[in-house]
Structures are given as structure tokens and as C-alpha cells.
Length: 330
Ligand SMILES: [Zn+2]
Ligand SMILES: [Zn+2]
Image (tube, rainbow, N blue to C red; front, side, top):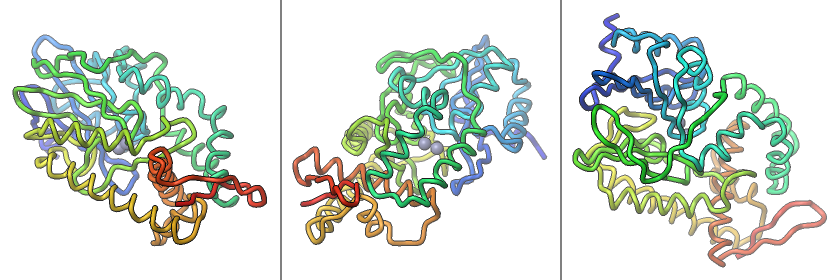
């Protein structure tokens, strides 16, 4: 195989690599920047699997690089497919690992504290109606997922508005919360180019879920992020999945906003018809057959919508003593 075929040129010394992940999206985008005089930078890292490590190695070697040449890693958000190899790269290269300050305190900490946090996660899901069998599987799944993540020992904070150099250009650090609390984007004004991670995706709606340790209104956060992206109106974006490059960000942001507003209307109407738990609402909103992790995502996403409506005063909730579950009413 011609290794250089792996790399998609983005701008100047910045290349995109599609790294395989064992999820329905199939690949995640990892960016490699090799400017003359350094520093060699990666944006995102993929999951710790043998396939991902080997594709990353091939991508690096097509640019004449080894693991040890990496100076810096910037991570868009803490999800395993973006963060998983952070610890391995840190260990092999001594590279500095960077994330948005907001993400370090919550998302990144999760990988260090997941075992202590697990009971809280399970209680959160149980209080919103997730059945017992799914809760057990959820625990097992978290354990399995954790095995594919090698956390960094030290992560350095980036702040919103700060400038970072990539491909010899200055990029502004953006805070794009919703899909993750501290989701980072990089914006280059003159080229109108955005490094978006999962903040916007061309084919799927980025999961926006309320979990035990997320900010209280991830959907509200995400609707603001969509407004921000719409106003920026990037000419091109590098995206985490189904990319690496995407055009029409402004139109896609409008489409996603309309999609979430439809779901908000749906949930309000359903809760009005028959008050019920977020889990029961999620069965109506995601009526198709889903596996356990799909059901958990569906619950977290439904909950993000229900809680957004509650914070707006359009729904309220009561605690059902008998069933020990929160019930949403219109
Ligand atoms: Zn993600
Ligand atoms: Zn992702």
C-alpha cells in the first residue's frame, strides 16, 4: 500500500488521517501537523486498539515520523475514540497533552475516576427509569470501554480565545459545548476553517446526552454552539467522523437545530399525553430496536431534551415514590 494515500492534505503542513474504530462511524479523524522547525502536533488520537495503532504508525511513517517525534497533542474532547491513545503517546514521546480547561475537570477526570463515579452514573440512569438488566450490562460495558483508553498522566489546559499555532497559522481556541462539556474547536479566521471534532458532523446528529456528571443543560449548550457555528460560517471544517472534510457547516447547523426543536416538541407532546419517565419517553422517541449501549445513549439524549424543557419551565418532574423514578409532566 502507498502510505501517502492514507493522508489527506488539509492546509500547508497539516494532514488528516482516517483511523479505524470499532464503532458504527468506522473511522475517527486524527490530524498530523509537521511544520518546518516543529512542533509536530496531533489533533485527537483514536482508540487504543492494534488496528488504530498500526494505521497511526503508517500515517506517521508516511511523513517520515515515529511516535517519539510527536511534540504536542491537542484533544477535542474526552470521548474514547478521540482520547484513547493519549497516555500511550505521552509515554512514547513525552509529548504535552492539551485539552480545553473545562474538559479536564470533568470529561478527562472521568478516565481517572470512573470506578468511583460508576455508582453515581448507575444511580442517575436508574432514577430516570433504565431497567435493572441494562444497568448491570452498563457496568460491564464501562469496564470494557475503559480498557481501550490509556489516560494521560498530565494534561495541560487550553483556554477559550487563546491562540495556538498549527501549519504555521494562528488558530483561535473555541469552546463548543453540548456533545461534551469542554469540547474544543480551532478556528482560523482568514481561511475560514474550523477543526470541529464532533461538534458538528455531516451524516449523524452528534449525541447530546445528560449524564450524572455533565453540565445541567447540555442541549441548551449545544443549541448555543450551533448558533456560534452558524455565525462563524466556516468555508470548510475538519470533522471527527464521516470526513475528514466537510462543507456547508452553516446549513448543517440550521438543520441540526431544527432537528432538536422537533424532538423538543415531540417530547412535550408525549409528556402531555401521558406523564412518564425519561426512559419511557426515550422508547417513544427512539422506537427502533437498539442494543444496551444504544438504549443508554437514547435515554441520555431524551433526558437532555426533557431537562432543557424543564429548565425553560415547559415541563416539570415529580418523584414517583413507589417506582423510585422521576416522572416528566407537561
Ligand atoms: Zn464524541
Ligand atoms: Zn467521536
